[in-house]
Image 1 (cartoon, helix red, strand yellow):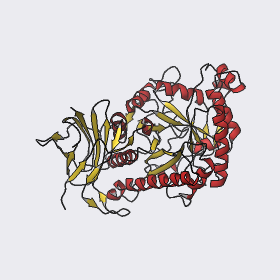
Image 2: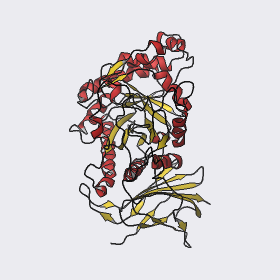
Image 3: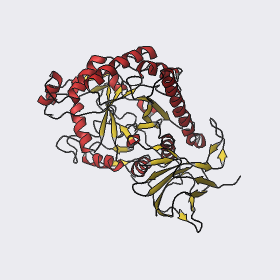
Image 4: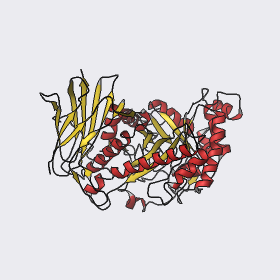
Length: 503
């Protein structure tokens, strides 16, 4: 087997434009995502509202365009009215989703303030577990109507004269899951989502709506759920959601790094299902995809079983990510970019402390986990048009996947900046992979940067005592040869960003 890979891209062979919202994230009222994460009054770096400035800086470093809120499982039992009005009058509530106490010190208005400070937009979820169209109508009136009605005037009385103008809304969360408060059949949810969507768009016709898809590709009702839900909601929604998490419980790294191939199939199946419903409806509108929960999640499962119930902001779902996790996150980002024509929004779940790229110590430091880096690189450099990648690569067979290419890669052309960026993962655990890049349709180019994330220890992680054990360097060797081809060596088990400036 020849350990060499090649990739050809042509500027006229386009997959689609990248919607910046593909680099979104997620803040749920879960664990220390809010309390001790984005919000910690009394912290040395807390601002006048209690938001941590050090966390805000790390969030801004990711250039996150949209953040989903307030859940997640949490939203299916949440009364949004508990989180508005004077702080000293807010009620503490039991959160049945995560068996904690919710103090409601952060609610809709505070979160919108945080979004403005973080230079991001909100993707707001409405409760379709214990509630329905009436409460959804009320929250959008409170959020988006200028004034002159009960709910909009109430917002003004709370100190927010200008409407928040939240433009993206999720119609519930994982409503197919038996763990979900108010779980529904596809018909039950489809009918509720349809009626909720109608009243929300009557209040504000400019919004976009996301219907709940299956809570994972392993659900026994997938993809029938999507087909039934979209048959009920097609005329009123714009997106269908996807959720998927991966782990390496079997300590099989080769199989773990191949799991993004399952993500490819998941995305393609949902696209096919959405297109089937469009055809059945004789519709003109394409339903696009919102992959609004995705990540690696398995490290913290055992610790979470030991948490005492009914505490406030316990350390739940605090995965400590290692180097191989960052590689799979890179592969998952590439999977979504390869279907950028249909995957228009995505949310890395979550943003701070809870299965997150950013970790904090209560009263102490904030730092970057390993997965911060591929997410940051894709967000900063993956804007523009995704080009069709013609890849030749040696392959391997893993436990759950066959013909897994060692090279996982994609190219993004930013015409405005005259740049092409290659994102590439070498899945080989022991060997470097020579790569030849052929940009035959472009004029001459030069390599401006070859960023590499690599580590001899797949299990190396960044922790409170060692923030920078795993971090990228600029020492990659990509270069243009005498024939105008780009030659590079991708180190074993590495994430690579090759940035090219066009002449």
